[in-house]
Amino acid sequence: MNPKRKQTSAMPSQPAESAGKHKRAFRIILITGLPIVVLLLSFSVGRYSVSLPQMADIIRAHLLGLPDPGPASISIVLLHVRIPRIAAALLVGGALAAAGASYQGLFRNPMVSPDILGASAGAGFGAALAMLLSLGPAGIQLLSFLLGMGAVALTYSIGSLVSRRGGAVLSLVLTGIVISTVFSSFTSIIKLAADPDNKLPAITFWLMGGLSLVGLNDLAILAPLVLIGLTPLLLLRWKLNVLSFGEEEAQALGVNTTRIRIVTIICSTLLTATAVSVSGMIGWVGLIVPHLSRMVVGPNYKVLLPISALYGASYLLLVDDIARSALTMEIPLGILTALIGAPFFIVLLITGKRGWE
Image (tube, rainbow, N blue to C red; front, side, top):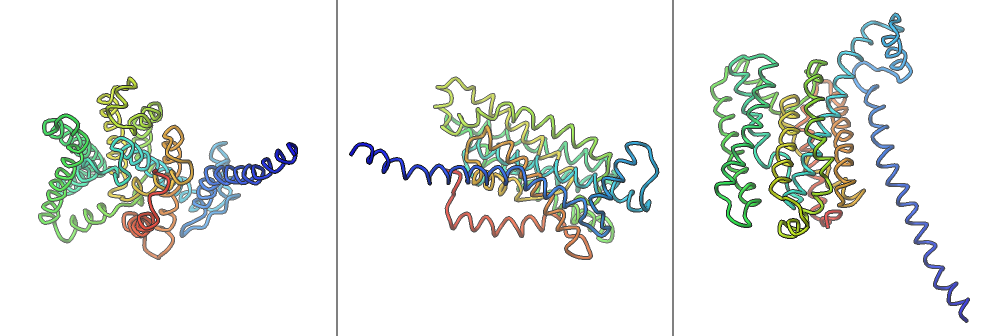
């Protein structure tokens, strides 16, 4: 009887093991295959169609110093427009998603997004003010970045004064909402004072978000700042797991919660302000993508944070492909991310917060 019992008890585990292998294989395909497909698709999408072999020939010719293998217009579009735009979409999407995932872990709240502490509102006001003063593209990016960082610094300073024992996180969130409202009001005043024929349309279009004006000079600034902001978060991501247990439990495990909170806020703000200064106001990426990543890899930040950055890059790149090819005129990215993100988030709310718990 014993051998039979062993056989019957062992039988149910075989389908379970097979299902587990299929599930892991499917996750690997989602993690690695989907971003590669989106990246390759993005090179050929647009008003000027560029096939993958043609793209490879053009890049190889320029690397080796050979003559252009095709029309010069195709080479200009690929090297000076499409490749910088694809790289910017990857960097901005990855930065916003990583910042959103970090904030959600820090505040232990899946409803938190990268603009919770006022970075986006401050950066938007800085860009609008720079346009009103006619400072040029470099001035717009610089003032947007500085005021985005300054808004969060103001939030943290006021939140630290308001907070009492055990209320630091709540004070930061509430102060961030107030600061965001104040800077949004300042932006509205700037729009009211702007020239309605020239500056007001430029401010309005910038605030809707987009990557149509990104060039190689922008990438030279964007890439190092994203790397500076993302590296400490990746190195300290395991401590976000500890913070999810609660502040007292994390301190009992030897984690300096104040230091980790400051580092996370500084790095996430740097990522958000940098992204907004280049692309304008693009919402929902830092809120939706971490949820998608949790559904695929679970809540462990050792895996969740890098996957969120990877998925954020792929997601924004895919949305940008739609923005520049769906209609004859380009659709602002902020509009598309809201149209896609809001219904998806409603579905998440209806079906329950799977992946977070």
